[in-house]
Length: 391
Ligand code: 2IP
Ligand code: CA
Image (cartoon, rainbow, N blue to C red; front, side):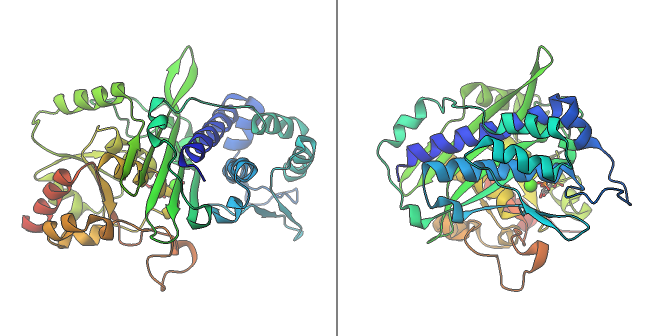
Protein backbone atom coordinates (compact mmCIF):
# COMPACT_ATOMS: atom_id res chain seq x y z
CA UNK A 1 0.00 0.00 0.00
CA UNK A 2 1.31 3.42 -0.94
CA UNK A 3 1.79 5.54 2.18
CA UNK A 4 0.92 8.81 0.41
CA UNK A 5 -2.45 7.35 -0.64
CA UNK A 6 -3.22 6.27 2.91
CA UNK A 7 -2.30 9.75 4.20
CA UNK A 8 -4.62 11.37 1.64
CA UNK A 9 -7.45 9.04 2.68
CA UNK A 10 -6.90 9.64 6.41
CA UNK A 11 -6.79 13.41 5.90
CA UNK A 12 -10.11 13.27 3.99
CA UNK A 13 -11.74 11.00 6.59
CA UNK A 14 -10.64 13.18 9.49
CA UNK A 15 -12.04 16.23 7.67
CA UNK A 16 -15.34 14.46 7.15
CA UNK A 17 -15.34 13.65 10.88
CA UNK A 18 -14.65 17.31 11.67
CA UNK A 19 -17.43 18.41 9.36
CA UNK A 20 -19.90 16.05 11.09
CA UNK A 21 -18.79 17.42 14.46
CA UNK A 22 -19.39 20.99 13.22
CA UNK A 23 -22.76 20.09 11.64
CA UNK A 24 -24.04 18.61 14.91
CA UNK A 25 -23.31 21.88 16.69
CA UNK A 26 -24.67 24.04 13.85
CA UNK A 27 -28.03 22.29 13.22
CA UNK A 28 -30.47 22.98 16.02
CA UNK A 29 -32.22 19.63 15.51
CA UNK A 30 -28.93 17.82 16.21
CA UNK A 31 -27.60 20.22 18.82
CA UNK A 32 -30.76 19.72 20.89
CA UNK A 33 -30.06 16.00 20.93
CA UNK A 34 -26.44 16.59 21.89
CA UNK A 35 -27.11 18.80 24.87
CA UNK A 36 -30.29 17.06 26.03
CA UNK A 37 -29.97 16.20 29.68
CA UNK A 38 -29.90 12.50 30.31
CA UNK A 39 -33.01 11.70 32.31
CA UNK A 40 -32.72 8.94 34.87
CA UNK A 41 -36.00 7.31 33.86
CA UNK A 42 -36.56 7.13 30.11
CA UNK A 43 -40.17 6.83 29.01
CA UNK A 44 -39.11 5.53 25.60
CA UNK A 45 -37.23 2.29 25.28
CA UNK A 46 -34.48 4.21 23.52
CA UNK A 47 -31.41 2.85 21.84
CA UNK A 48 -29.42 6.01 22.33
CA UNK A 49 -29.42 7.45 25.84
CA UNK A 50 -26.48 9.61 24.97
CA UNK A 51 -26.27 11.31 21.56
CA UNK A 52 -22.62 12.18 22.05
CA UNK A 53 -21.80 8.49 21.91
CA UNK A 54 -23.76 8.13 18.67
CA UNK A 55 -21.85 11.08 17.20
CA UNK A 56 -18.57 9.43 18.19
CA UNK A 57 -19.64 6.07 16.74
CA UNK A 58 -20.82 7.62 13.48
CA UNK A 59 -17.51 9.40 12.89
CA UNK A 60 -15.64 6.21 13.75
CA UNK A 61 -17.79 4.00 11.49
CA UNK A 62 -17.65 6.51 8.65
CA UNK A 63 -13.85 6.44 8.78
CA UNK A 64 -13.89 2.65 8.83
CA UNK A 65 -16.25 2.59 5.86
CA UNK A 66 -14.24 5.08 3.81
CA UNK A 67 -10.88 3.43 4.51
CA UNK A 68 -12.23 -0.07 3.79
CA UNK A 69 -13.68 1.14 0.50
CA UNK A 70 -10.26 2.36 -0.56
CA UNK A 71 -8.14 -0.37 1.06
CA UNK A 72 -10.13 -3.63 1.30
CA UNK A 73 -9.34 -5.64 4.43
CA UNK A 74 -8.11 -2.70 6.50
CA UNK A 75 -11.43 -2.50 8.41
CA UNK A 76 -10.66 -5.43 10.72
CA UNK A 77 -7.61 -3.60 11.97
CA UNK A 78 -9.29 -0.31 12.80
CA UNK A 79 -9.97 0.24 16.48
CA UNK A 80 -11.71 3.05 18.26
CA UNK A 81 -12.92 4.20 21.61
CA UNK A 82 -16.57 3.26 21.15
CA UNK A 83 -18.56 0.07 20.51
CA UNK A 84 -20.99 0.39 17.60
CA UNK A 85 -23.68 -1.72 19.30
CA UNK A 86 -26.60 0.05 20.96
CA UNK A 87 -29.07 -1.83 23.14
CA UNK A 88 -32.42 -0.53 24.38
CA UNK A 89 -34.16 -1.38 27.64
CA UNK A 90 -36.09 -4.17 25.88
CA UNK A 91 -32.80 -5.90 25.18
CA UNK A 92 -32.92 -5.27 21.39
CA UNK A 93 -29.58 -4.43 19.82
CA UNK A 94 -28.70 -2.45 16.71
CA UNK A 95 -25.26 -2.24 15.20
CA UNK A 96 -24.51 1.17 13.76
CA UNK A 97 -22.70 0.95 10.46
CA UNK A 98 -22.49 2.84 7.21
CA UNK A 99 -23.93 1.13 4.12
CA UNK A 100 -23.06 1.80 0.47
CA UNK A 101 -26.71 2.81 0.01
CA UNK A 102 -27.38 6.00 1.95
CA UNK A 103 -31.10 5.18 2.28
CA UNK A 104 -30.24 2.06 4.25
CA UNK A 105 -28.01 4.13 6.57
CA UNK A 106 -30.77 6.74 7.02
CA UNK A 107 -33.26 3.99 7.96
CA UNK A 108 -30.90 2.52 10.51
CA UNK A 109 -30.22 5.94 12.03
CA UNK A 110 -33.94 6.67 12.18
CA UNK A 111 -34.41 3.49 14.22
CA UNK A 112 -31.53 4.36 16.55
CA UNK A 113 -32.94 7.87 16.96
CA UNK A 114 -36.46 6.69 17.91
CA UNK A 115 -38.04 7.75 14.63
CA UNK A 116 -36.47 11.23 14.44
CA UNK A 117 -36.41 11.34 10.63
CA UNK A 118 -35.15 14.89 10.36
CA UNK A 119 -32.09 14.21 12.49
CA UNK A 120 -31.43 10.92 10.67
CA UNK A 121 -31.54 12.69 7.28
CA UNK A 122 -29.27 15.52 8.40
CA UNK A 123 -26.70 13.09 9.74
CA UNK A 124 -26.87 10.90 6.64
CA UNK A 125 -26.26 13.82 4.29
CA UNK A 126 -23.14 14.75 6.30
CA UNK A 127 -21.89 11.16 6.24
CA UNK A 128 -21.93 10.96 2.45
CA UNK A 129 -20.63 14.46 1.71
CA UNK A 130 -17.87 14.39 -0.88
CA UNK A 131 -14.79 15.70 0.86
CA UNK A 132 -11.32 15.84 -0.60
CA UNK A 133 -8.85 18.17 1.02
CA UNK A 134 -5.35 19.10 -0.06
CA UNK A 135 -2.81 17.54 2.31
CA UNK A 136 -0.23 20.07 1.13
CA UNK A 137 2.92 19.89 -0.99
CA UNK A 138 4.74 17.76 1.62
CA UNK A 139 2.75 14.73 0.45
CA UNK A 140 4.99 14.48 -2.60
CA UNK A 141 7.99 13.97 -0.35
CA UNK A 142 6.59 10.52 0.47
CA UNK A 143 7.18 9.49 -3.13
CA UNK A 144 6.46 5.82 -3.70
CA UNK A 145 7.03 4.73 -0.09
CA UNK A 146 5.09 1.52 0.62
CA UNK A 147 3.87 -0.27 3.76
CA UNK A 148 2.52 -3.81 4.11
CA UNK A 149 -1.24 -3.54 4.62
CA UNK A 150 -1.15 -6.70 6.76
CA UNK A 151 1.22 -5.06 9.22
CA UNK A 152 -0.82 -1.97 10.08
CA UNK A 153 -3.40 -1.17 12.73
CA UNK A 154 -5.38 2.05 13.14
CA UNK A 155 -6.53 3.83 16.32
CA UNK A 156 -9.29 6.40 16.00
CA UNK A 157 -10.50 8.92 18.54
CA UNK A 158 -13.49 10.36 16.69
CA UNK A 159 -14.06 13.29 19.06
CA UNK A 160 -11.42 13.96 21.69
CA UNK A 161 -12.41 16.40 24.49
CA UNK A 162 -16.03 15.33 24.41
CA UNK A 163 -16.85 17.28 27.56
CA UNK A 164 -15.75 20.51 25.83
CA UNK A 165 -17.65 19.47 22.71
CA UNK A 166 -20.91 19.12 24.62
CA UNK A 167 -20.43 22.33 26.65
CA UNK A 168 -19.71 24.14 23.41
CA UNK A 169 -18.21 27.30 24.88
CA UNK A 170 -15.62 29.26 22.92
CA UNK A 171 -12.47 29.11 24.98
CA UNK A 172 -11.14 32.59 25.61
CA UNK A 173 -7.61 33.15 24.33
CA UNK A 174 -5.74 34.45 27.34
CA UNK A 175 -2.02 35.20 27.52
CA UNK A 176 -1.15 32.66 24.87
CA UNK A 177 -2.38 31.25 21.60
CA UNK A 178 -3.74 28.23 23.44
CA UNK A 179 -7.02 28.14 25.32
CA UNK A 180 -7.59 26.35 28.61
CA UNK A 181 -10.92 24.90 27.60
CA UNK A 182 -13.72 25.32 25.09
CA UNK A 183 -14.57 24.01 21.63
CA UNK A 184 -11.07 24.79 20.38
CA UNK A 185 -9.82 21.81 22.43
CA UNK A 186 -11.83 19.31 20.34
CA UNK A 187 -9.69 17.18 18.00
CA UNK A 188 -10.42 14.31 15.59
CA UNK A 189 -7.49 11.90 15.84
CA UNK A 190 -6.35 9.02 13.62
CA UNK A 191 -3.13 7.09 14.09
CA UNK A 192 -1.60 4.19 12.17
CA UNK A 193 0.91 1.87 13.86
CA UNK A 194 2.91 -1.16 12.81
CA UNK A 195 1.68 -4.41 14.33
CA UNK A 196 5.21 -5.80 14.20
CA UNK A 197 6.89 -3.03 16.23
CA UNK A 198 3.95 -1.29 17.92
CA UNK A 199 5.37 2.07 16.80
CA UNK A 200 3.16 4.78 15.30
CA UNK A 201 4.04 5.53 11.69
CA UNK A 202 1.37 7.94 10.52
CA UNK A 203 -0.98 10.38 12.20
CA UNK A 204 -3.64 12.93 11.34
CA UNK A 205 -5.08 15.49 13.75
CA UNK A 206 -7.95 17.74 12.73
CA UNK A 207 -9.25 20.55 14.96
CA UNK A 208 -12.80 21.25 13.76
CA UNK A 209 -13.19 24.44 15.83
CA UNK A 210 -9.97 26.39 15.40
CA UNK A 211 -11.27 29.92 14.79
CA UNK A 212 -14.52 31.73 14.07
CA UNK A 213 -14.85 33.50 10.72
CA UNK A 214 -18.13 35.34 10.09
CA UNK A 215 -19.71 33.28 12.90
CA UNK A 216 -18.64 30.02 11.24
CA UNK A 217 -16.08 27.70 12.72
CA UNK A 218 -13.04 26.97 10.59
CA UNK A 219 -10.83 23.98 11.25
CA UNK A 220 -7.23 23.02 10.71
CA UNK A 221 -5.62 19.73 9.82
CA UNK A 222 -2.11 18.38 10.15
CA UNK A 223 -0.36 15.07 9.53
CA UNK A 224 2.98 13.39 9.92
CA UNK A 225 4.73 10.22 8.78
CA UNK A 226 7.63 8.56 10.55
CA UNK A 227 8.45 5.33 8.76
CA UNK A 228 11.91 3.75 8.68
CA UNK A 229 14.21 6.63 7.77
CA UNK A 230 11.45 8.82 6.30
CA UNK A 231 10.07 11.70 8.33
CA UNK A 232 7.61 14.08 6.73
CA UNK A 233 5.09 16.44 8.31
CA UNK A 234 2.69 19.11 7.17
CA UNK A 235 2.89 21.71 9.94
CA UNK A 236 2.49 25.14 8.37
CA UNK A 237 4.73 28.10 9.01
CA UNK A 238 2.04 30.31 10.54
CA UNK A 239 1.72 27.72 13.30
CA UNK A 240 5.44 27.86 13.94
CA UNK A 241 5.16 31.67 14.08
CA UNK A 242 2.32 31.39 16.59
CA UNK A 243 4.56 29.20 18.72
CA UNK A 244 7.27 31.83 18.64
CA UNK A 245 4.87 34.53 19.80
CA UNK A 246 3.71 32.34 22.66
CA UNK A 247 7.24 31.87 23.91
CA UNK A 248 8.20 35.50 23.55
CA UNK A 249 5.30 36.60 25.71
CA UNK A 250 6.67 34.40 28.47
CA UNK A 251 8.58 36.50 31.05
CA UNK A 252 11.49 34.12 31.12
CA UNK A 253 12.19 32.99 27.57
CA UNK A 254 14.62 30.31 28.72
CA UNK A 255 12.04 28.70 30.92
CA UNK A 256 10.50 25.56 29.44
CA UNK A 257 6.73 25.66 29.26
CA UNK A 258 4.92 22.45 30.04
CA UNK A 259 1.30 21.45 29.52
CA UNK A 260 -0.56 19.58 32.23
CA UNK A 261 -4.06 18.35 32.90
CA UNK A 262 -6.12 20.41 35.36
CA UNK A 263 -6.34 17.22 37.39
CA UNK A 264 -2.58 16.56 37.52
CA UNK A 265 -1.31 15.64 41.00
CA UNK A 266 -0.43 18.72 43.05
CA UNK A 267 2.98 17.33 43.94
CA UNK A 268 3.90 16.94 40.25
CA UNK A 269 2.67 20.44 39.41
CA UNK A 270 4.76 21.89 42.24
CA UNK A 271 7.84 19.87 41.34
CA UNK A 272 7.91 21.09 37.72
CA UNK A 273 6.40 24.48 38.55
CA UNK A 274 9.58 25.50 40.43
CA UNK A 275 11.57 25.60 37.20
CA UNK A 276 9.08 25.58 34.36
CA UNK A 277 6.02 27.48 33.28
CA UNK A 278 3.00 25.22 33.79
CA UNK A 279 0.02 25.65 31.46
CA UNK A 280 -3.32 23.89 31.75
CA UNK A 281 -5.53 22.91 28.83
CA UNK A 282 -8.35 20.41 28.36
CA UNK A 283 -8.01 17.45 26.02
CA UNK A 284 -5.19 14.99 25.61
CA UNK A 285 -5.16 15.55 21.83
CA UNK A 286 -5.19 19.34 22.20
CA UNK A 287 -2.25 19.27 24.61
CA UNK A 288 -0.32 17.04 22.20
CA UNK A 289 -1.06 19.49 19.38
CA UNK A 290 0.21 22.28 21.66
CA UNK A 291 3.58 20.51 21.72
CA UNK A 292 3.48 19.65 17.99
CA UNK A 293 2.80 23.27 17.04
CA UNK A 294 5.49 24.57 19.37
CA UNK A 295 3.17 26.52 21.68
CA UNK A 296 4.64 24.54 24.57
CA UNK A 297 7.76 22.40 24.92
CA UNK A 298 6.34 19.30 26.56
CA UNK A 299 3.20 17.66 27.98
CA UNK A 300 3.67 15.82 31.25
CA UNK A 301 1.05 13.46 32.71
CA UNK A 302 1.83 11.26 35.69
CA UNK A 303 -1.39 9.21 35.57
CA UNK A 304 -2.83 6.56 33.28
CA UNK A 305 -5.74 8.76 32.15
CA UNK A 306 -5.04 8.72 28.41
CA UNK A 307 -5.63 5.88 25.97
CA UNK A 308 -4.00 4.47 22.84
CA UNK A 309 -6.56 6.26 20.65
CA UNK A 310 -5.73 9.62 22.31
CA UNK A 311 -2.02 9.46 21.55
CA UNK A 312 -1.31 7.25 18.48
CA UNK A 313 -1.93 9.91 15.77
CA UNK A 314 -0.20 12.87 17.48
CA UNK A 315 2.63 10.54 18.49
CA UNK A 316 3.38 9.76 14.82
CA UNK A 317 3.47 13.51 14.07
CA UNK A 318 5.82 14.12 17.01
CA UNK A 319 8.15 11.35 15.79
CA UNK A 320 8.13 12.94 12.34
CA UNK A 321 9.24 16.23 13.95
CA UNK A 322 12.07 14.53 15.88
CA UNK A 323 10.20 14.33 19.20
CA UNK A 324 8.22 11.54 20.78
CA UNK A 325 6.16 10.25 23.71
CA UNK A 326 7.57 8.08 26.47
CA UNK A 327 6.01 6.75 29.61
CA UNK A 328 6.24 9.03 32.68
CA UNK A 329 7.94 6.23 34.62
CA UNK A 330 11.01 6.56 32.35
CA UNK A 331 11.76 9.99 33.82
CA UNK A 332 13.71 7.96 36.37
CA UNK A 333 16.04 6.55 33.71
CA UNK A 334 19.26 8.16 32.53
CA UNK A 335 18.72 10.55 29.63
CA UNK A 336 21.71 9.10 27.76
CA UNK A 337 20.12 5.63 27.83
CA UNK A 338 16.86 6.98 26.40
CA UNK A 339 18.64 9.09 23.76
CA UNK A 340 20.69 6.08 22.64
CA UNK A 341 17.67 3.92 21.91
CA UNK A 342 14.77 6.31 21.92
CA UNK A 343 12.50 4.09 19.76
CA UNK A 344 12.65 1.37 22.39
CA UNK A 345 11.30 3.85 24.94
CA UNK A 346 8.36 5.14 22.88
CA UNK A 347 4.77 4.27 23.85
CA UNK A 348 3.57 1.23 21.89
CA UNK A 349 0.17 0.61 20.30
CA UNK A 350 -0.04 -3.07 19.35
CA UNK A 351 -0.79 -4.53 22.80
CA UNK A 352 -2.00 -3.41 26.21
CA UNK A 353 0.83 -2.01 28.37
CA UNK A 354 0.61 -5.11 30.55
CA UNK A 355 -1.55 -8.17 30.97
CA UNK A 356 -3.05 -7.15 34.28
CA UNK A 357 -4.92 -4.26 32.63
CA UNK A 358 -8.60 -5.07 32.12
CA UNK A 359 -11.90 -3.31 31.43
CA UNK A 360 -11.70 0.41 30.76
CA UNK A 361 -8.01 0.55 31.63
CA UNK A 362 -6.96 -2.13 29.14
CA UNK A 363 -5.86 0.28 26.40
CA UNK A 364 -4.69 3.07 28.67
CA UNK A 365 -1.22 4.54 28.59
CA UNK A 366 -1.10 3.14 32.05
CA UNK A 367 2.08 4.74 33.38
CA UNK A 368 1.40 8.29 32.27
CA UNK A 369 3.34 10.06 29.55
CA UNK A 370 5.85 12.72 28.60
CA UNK A 371 5.40 14.17 25.10
CA UNK A 372 8.32 16.24 23.82
CA UNK A 373 9.15 18.12 20.68
CA UNK A 374 12.84 17.22 20.63
CA UNK A 375 15.35 15.33 22.78
CA UNK A 376 16.71 18.66 24.07
CA UNK A 377 13.39 19.37 25.76
CA UNK A 378 13.10 15.83 27.09
CA UNK A 379 16.55 16.22 28.65
CA UNK A 380 15.44 19.33 30.53
CA UNK A 381 12.32 17.58 31.82
CA UNK A 382 14.40 14.60 33.02
CA UNK A 383 17.03 16.86 34.62
CA UNK A 384 14.41 18.70 36.61
CA UNK A 385 12.61 15.53 37.65
CA UNK A 386 15.81 13.86 38.82
CA UNK A 387 17.36 16.82 40.63
CA UNK A 388 14.35 18.39 42.31
CA UNK A 389 13.61 17.22 45.84
CA UNK A 390 9.93 16.40 46.32
CA UNK A 391 9.64 18.19 49.67
C1 2IP B 1 -10.25 12.45 27.16
C2 2IP B 1 -10.11 13.94 27.00
C3 2IP B 1 -9.81 14.52 28.36
C4 2IP B 1 -8.45 14.05 28.86
C5 2IP B 1 -8.42 12.52 28.87
C6 2IP B 1 -8.87 11.92 27.53
O1 2IP B 1 -10.77 11.88 25.98
O2 2IP B 1 -9.09 14.28 26.11
O3 2IP B 1 -9.87 15.90 28.25
O4 2IP B 1 -8.24 14.56 30.16
O5 2IP B 1 -7.13 12.10 29.13
O6 2IP B 1 -8.87 10.53 27.58
P1 2IP B 1 -7.58 16.00 30.48
O7 2IP B 1 -8.41 17.04 29.77
O8 2IP B 1 -7.62 16.10 31.97
O9 2IP B 1 -6.21 15.93 29.91
P2 2IP B 1 -12.38 11.89 25.61
O10 2IP B 1 -12.86 13.28 25.67
O11 2IP B 1 -12.36 11.32 24.20
O12 2IP B 1 -13.01 10.97 26.60
CA1 CA C 1 -10.08 10.88 23.84
